[in-house]
Amino acid sequence: MTSPLLLPYEGPHLTLRNRIAMAPMTRNRADDATGVPHPLTAEYYAQRATAGLIVSEGIWPGALGKGEPGVPGLTTDAQVAGWRAVTEAVHAAGGTIFAQLWHVGRMSHPLTLPGRATPVAPSAVRIESETIHTVEGRVPHVTPCPMTTAEVEATVTDFAAAARNAVRAGFDGVELHGANGYLIQQFLAENTNRRTDRYGGSRAGRLRFTLDVVTAVAAEIGPERVALRISPDNPENEIAEQDPKGTYRALVDTLDPLGLAYLHIIERGAYEALADLRPRWSGTLIGNYNGPEPTSRQAGEEAVAAGLADIFSFGRLFVANPDLPARFATGADLTPHNPSLLHKGGAKGYTDYPPHQSGRTHPSHATA
Image (cartoon, rainbow, N blue to C red; front, top):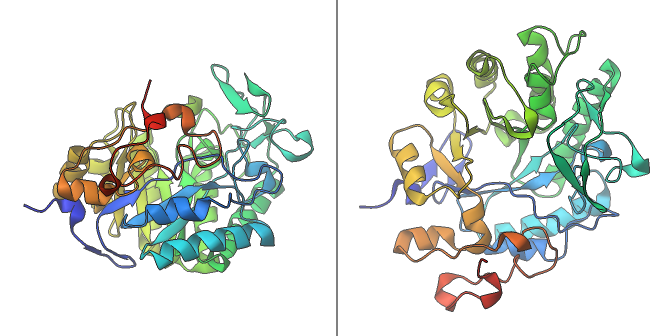
């Protein structure tokens, strides 16, 4: 019996060879000074182009959106040219690729931002229990600077401009990162949004930034090229949502009529978001389980077979298994990735994981 993950997908705006998506994963290989993708990035994504859909690593849509060293941007002509090499390589290999636009909000540090700027956020709420990666190692978070209403509106414009650049670079669409405690979710969550202007206060106010970004990007490049990733009830990065069911039902109900490319839901926490939100979303839905261990093939198959998702995304499994769909199809063993190489730079742990047919895994990739 054919795995449901290996069946083709024909949706309102997506035609894919299978129902396996490569989830966005930060790899920190870009030139830190320019934000231009590494020359090996085209090879990295082309190796994985047998995924039905690739969602790129997070890309900052404005300088204050950058969260770590080595994260690429989409604001300059040089960055657009760098990404064009990536999309051309993926398309030549028969793949489909969306750019994930990622503004981290308070999840940054002056050591990372231009001019040692203070990170921005909906409100001045500092992350207390964690540290953050910088060029000087892991350091405590700083208290972010609350955005003025004008700065919020300018950030919406930044997202739209970056989406236009993504299309210029040849991406098939963009996914807006509204999950995992970054800027969009910081506006959605009660504990990080203590604003009193129109971008805070009531549920409608907390939803406004997300809706403004989605509609601005859709107006710029067409709703059929725009997707949103969310992670309801996800406590990552000290997010606390008092009523995730109410918040995300209202969000999905408002977005559904727009005819977006897809909704990407990370289910993590007590709220069973896929089961609750699937009936409210008439378009393509991508599911994901973001737990401490890589999601299994079986979990993805069960979600698709049950109708909870049309497509299922895998992240860490794609790092060390560039031919993941073929391995699912043949039942071949999966190579474990070496976590210490995820963010090191260069080819090691990036483009040198061989496909199964090439023989044994390189010994440098053995996990400790």
